[in-house]
Image (cartoon, rainbow, N blue to C red):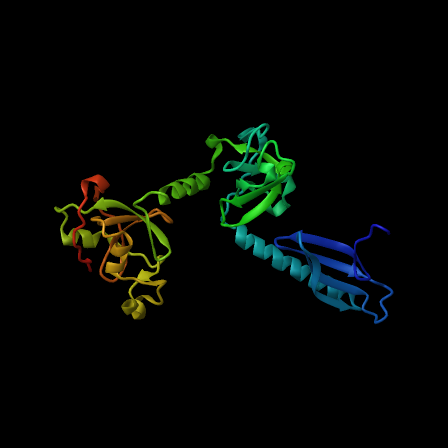
Length: 300
C-alpha cells in the first residue's frame, strides 16, 4: 500500500498511456462526499506532473465508461497520426556501434523497446543527434539532444538509449528523400515561394508549340498557388500567386520548368497560376544561361 499510486486521496487502480496522455481511474471508498470513483488525464514532463480533466462520481460504471471513451479517443488520435507511416522496426544489426564515437550530426537509432508500444516504429526510432553531453565520447553527462527526421520536432534521449548509428544501406526511402531534400535546399539555385522550395530543372524546347505545352499542363489545386482573381473558380488560395513575384523569388533565372522539392512534381509558371507540367523539356544548365531574359506567363 505504501507504494500505491495516488491522486489526492484516490488510489489509481487502472492507467493506460497512449499517445500524448495517460488515462487513469481511481478509487477512494472513504470519500466524505460519496464520490468514490474518479477518472482523469495524467501528464508528466521534466517540469511538472498533473492530473487534469477530472470527473468524480458515486457510480463506478459511469466512471468506467468515461475511462473507456477517453481511451478510445486517444486510440483514434494515434491511429490517425500514424496511419500512413511505415511500421518497420530498426534492429541492432542495422546499425554501427556508438562505442568511442561522437554522435553530433549522426543519424542515430533509438532502442525500440524503450518506446511506448504505439511508437515502436522506424519513424520514431530514427533521429539526428544535434548535441548534448552524451553526444561526446569523453563527456560526463548522458543527455543526447535530437531532431526527428520524419517530423519537425526536437526531443531528448540518453546515450544509453541509443541502439547505434544507422547504416546507410538501411536508410528507408523516406529518410533518403529527406536527406536529399536537405542537400538540395542548400544549393544556390533552390528558392522558396509560397511555402515550397523550387529547383530550376528545364527549358521548354522552341520546337514545342504553345498547343503542345498547353496539352501537357495540369492545374494542381493541392499547391494552393493561384491568383486572387481565380478565387471564385478555384476557391481560397494559399498564396496570391503572381508570375512576376515567382520569377523575382528565383532571381529571374532564365528557366521554364521548376521542380517542387516537397512533392517531386515539376511546374511551369503561368500568368495566374503555377501549372503542373507533364511534357518534354530540355535540362536546365546554370552555366549555359548567364543572362536573364524577360518572360511572359503562359495561359491556357
